[in-house]
Structures are given as structure tokens and as C-alpha cells.
Image 1: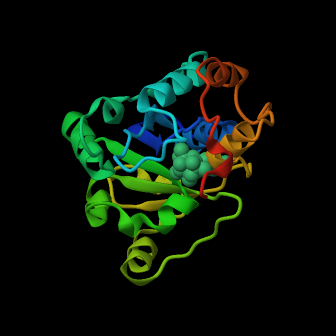
Image 2: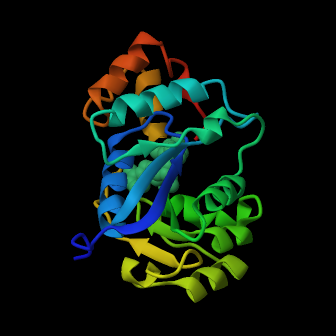
Length: 224
Ligand code: ATP
């Protein structure tokens, strides 16, 4: 069990669109935080890409929902720099900025298996390994599917556990076994769009915010 590690000086970045945030994110963040035992754990909502569909919520709404979800949990900090940044927001730029601020600290980017499977489609993806470690959370309905150079990189960098991160600022890949919750924002948007209740899949405060602001009402026909 890794959860008894003394906190390591370092930063965990759990990025996502959080459209809306749900218990799949929150439980995963809690477990990743405990396993990695980092003293600074940040949730980082992505800015709005130009091609975002109209059924989705604005960056301001997504940030407000995230704030409601974690306001009572001091172990989580929200880093809203991507929401505040104008123009495209690339993870590689965000990590480079944090690296410049934090010097040689351990930096860990935490992503789900689904996101990790197409890491090689991210802007300047190879540079990400120079800037951070990557922790990959298993997720229901998603399995490892890497090929070509991404597969080589992942295999070469694989570290069996978070202990291997100590003394190294970036460059390793750590699989994280977390409780499997088959909850997705897409599923929640669909339920809301078709008039069903997403209760017990996300915090009540977030559901109240969605209702008050009439979010996701047209999401029933969203293309998945
Ligand atoms: P969508 O359905 O709109 O694609 P999502 O539910 O996958 O959204 P994101 O905001 O895209 O949520 O996810 C942010 C990060 O959290 C990603 O790395 C994703 O893999 C991870 N994640 C999302 N839901 C879960 C879950 N239920 N369990 C583990 N990881 C999750």
C-alpha cells in the first residue's frame, strides 16, 4: 500500500474539461493524491477550444462547478491558468510554465487511460516527458492501446510505483490502480439533455448550479 508515504515535495496536475465535474473525477483525484503523496495537488480545468460544441458549458461555468465541488476539501487546489489564458491552451505550455515557476520539483501530470491512449495527438507530446512524470489511471471501458513511438516511450519510461519518482523531476510513467467508477461527463450531459436526473453521480451543489444556469439542456443528441 502506497498511501502511507511521507508527502513528497512536488506538484500533481489533474487536468480535464470537467464538463461537468463528477464523482469519477473527484474520487480518482482523491486516490491519486494519496497514492502519489504529493504536497501540492491541483485540479486544472482546460480552457475552451475554438471548436467546442454548443451543448458544452463555458470555461467560467466549468470552473464555477469545480469550485463548488471542492470548496470543502482543503487538500485540493484549483489552478485556473488555462481558463484565464487567451487563445489555445496546450498542456505542454502549461507544464513549461509550472516548471519555470517550480524549478526542479517533482511534477506529475495525472491522466486517465482514455486520455493516455492518444497522448501522441497532443501538441508537442514528446516534450511532456521532459517536463513532467505521467501517472495513468485505469478507467472502466478503456484499456492500454498504444502503438508506434508512443508505445516505445511508455514502455521505456514505465516505473512500477511512485517511490521511483523520488529524486527525479520528470520523465517516468506510473500506472495508478484506482477504484473503477464508470461515470463520464458525456453520460451526465446526456441524462440532463433527456430530462433524467444525474443525482448520485456528481455533487448536489453542482447539480443545483447546472439547474440554476440551465446548462446541458440540448445535450441529448450530442455526438459521442
Ligand atoms: P467526457 O465524457 O466529456 O469526455 P470525462 O468524463 O472523460 O469527459 P474529462 O474532464 O475529460 O472527463 O476527464 C478529465 C480527466 O479525468 C481525464 O484524464 C479522464 O481520463 C479522467 N477521468 C474522467 N472520468 C474518470 C473516471 N470515471 N475514472 C477515472 N478517471 C476519469
